[in-house]
Length: 205
Image (cartoon, rainbow, N blue to C red; front, side, top):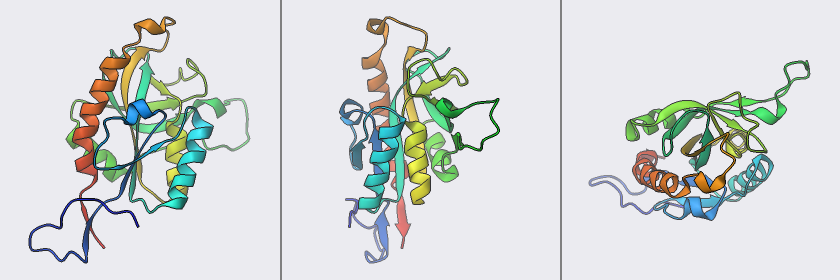
């Protein structure tokens, strides 16, 4: 069984106190490169791969919480702004003219979001679109490609989850040489360094 590495608090009973097991999920290894003191999963690019890989990981290992991280595009926010997802919106399945039921939105765990807002007071809290292709998430200020898949897999597994993004580009910018990958990755790494300890507080079991 996976456990964290922190020692038990002074005077506590080590049999009943343990750190939370946090799984940090991202689409690429580059986004995970600076993660410390947490389990990691490279889920691959796109909502389907993200959902499948996250679901498999949660079935194979005991996890207390999931933090999904990565870069994102935005309509108006300037890079390298940080965004915490107030909900993940699966834009690929939205069809206002259809009466067929579908799940297109999922909210993060309220307690994780509250802790994240304390750890990252500068981060915006906004809906984040999930879409299979760049530019299809116009319903939201922020768009990415995996958030709904990760959060939906976590919800079905009964694991609280949260999405954190660093803005690297304007959604409508066609020249990827102008996307600020390095700045966004640096901002993401700094944010994760501050956020992981806040999400791995001790649990009594």
